[in-house]
Image (cartoon, rainbow, N blue to C red; front, top):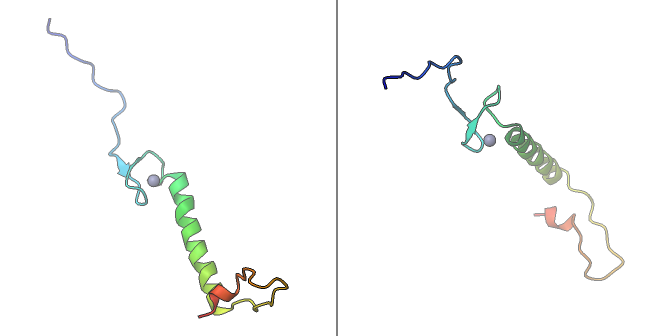
Length: 76
Ligand SMILES: [Zn+2]
């Protein structure tokens, strides 16, 4: 039996690896949509943290003694 296998009609594209997670991605841009959103959220979160550090909200005295004050933790 000398039977040859048929040639593939569609050639496989070179596999692109996602720059965020490192796994093979078949998306057009070479990056998974979920990884792209994680990357965008990371940049946005860093920007918001810088803005909050530069302009911290005023510390408000709570009526309850010992209550958590989120603005106080931004103060150096
Ligand atoms: Zn990915």
